[in-house]
Amino acid sequence: MLCTMKANSARIYLWASLVVLLVFLTWEGPRGGTFVGADTPANCSFEEIEGRWKFLMGPSTENSRVNCSMPWKPVKTWIVSLRFPDLAIDETVGRTGFWTLIYNQGYEAVIRNRKFFGFSDFEKISKKKVISYCNVTIGWSHNDDGGDWACFRGEQIMRFRDTGTSPVKVNNLDESATQFDENAIHRRNDKFIEGINKHQDSWKATYYDRYVNLTLGDMRRRAGGKLWKRVWPDVSPTDERTKQAASNLPEKFDWRDVGGIDYVSPVRDQGICGSCYAFASTATQESRLRVMTNNNVKVVMSPQEVVSCSEYAQGCEGGFPYLIAGKYGQDFGLVDETCYPYRERDAPCRQVSCRRFRTSEYHYIGGFYGACNEDLMRLELLRSGPLAISFEVYDDFLFYRGGIYHHVPMYDRFNPWETTNHVVTIVGYGHKGNNPKKGEKYWIVQNTWGSEWGERGYFRIRRGDNECNIETLAVATTPLTN
Image 1 (tube, rainbow, N blue to C red):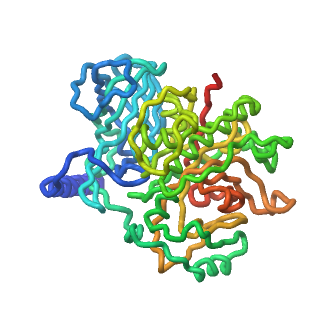
Image 2 (cartoon, rainbow, N blue to C red):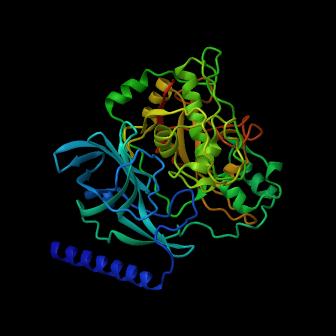
Image 3 (tube, rainbow, N blue to C red):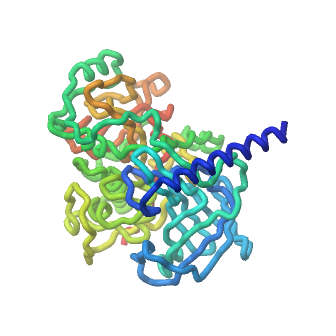
């Protein structure tokens, strides 16, 4: 049996290698070229990243905007093992550190007072196919105090798990995603909305005049970006210590009304730029600053500076709050909206000399990617303030007016849709009615679609059963107050 399994694994590996070779022979274009999507098309799992890596670093510089797209030669090499779920080991000197997967896009490692961040390398060979190089990452490295920058390249020496697949693989656009003309005009479909309201009574749907004359592509970008492959970690089990701590929390809580005081920054509208990640990241930082300073610091930060200037995201085609509210906030800082006003589109980065609001610490809830659950989210929410969260958006959500949302599987034949990855800000939680054991539980969430949408810019969504994967990718940050 063991011999048969090994033989099958070898055949699978050989088949995948031949497929990749054929793709190489037919593809034209630069590796690491431009891409479209809320995330890069790379798709690499824990099992594929876990292993022994060679960390290559280029010449040191104090320029945090070092251009790593130009050719560079490594001047320093570390051998680092990345072990599931979050242990990094520098095998050169035997020191240990931390690492986390970042969605399916790459990883960040912190070891020997130095940070390494890289996206998994990829080649986009068509609108539906991409090659993921799960054994190569490309990015930046610097000391954990923000100095001594260098270009970084990670090369996997060996995997710790036999996945039966090649580290270089061809990925297809999510086969369940609907293909459509992004330039087609969105059409009002009252029967679709009537169907949503008819099939359930937990929430109400309505049509928004804002959608008139928007294209299907505009609607998609507004709701996040299209997914190359749906990859969501499972909700992490809750240990007894966490359960006990969570049992002492109040049954309802809302940062908009804590003893009559509102600690949440205003609702804003991202428009048709896929910048939800930038708006949710700035909203999280703004609100947490208000909490930390007892509302003495009420700044409104600039999503446009993130869209235009951050190499940790993809402009109006999306990004992740871990890399923006967290890493970009720590490495570069966020600026005031008046310093860099929102333009609702990709625009060249311009240098400004305004104050930078920085992040001192950031992490996935639970400590690393895949460790999140409802109890940990509620504990962090009450302890430190609102959370940035990613979740899946289906087309019924576009028409939410009020109530406790859950996905209603309906089909709008006039407006094809593919599920997107949207980023929002959780500000509280509660339950329906007076009985917390029987009433439907929900999260209170600030959206990025303006105050005329939903419940004055907010929505409630089912809590406790990971509705639309909303309890898997929460991010917490600690802003610096000076």
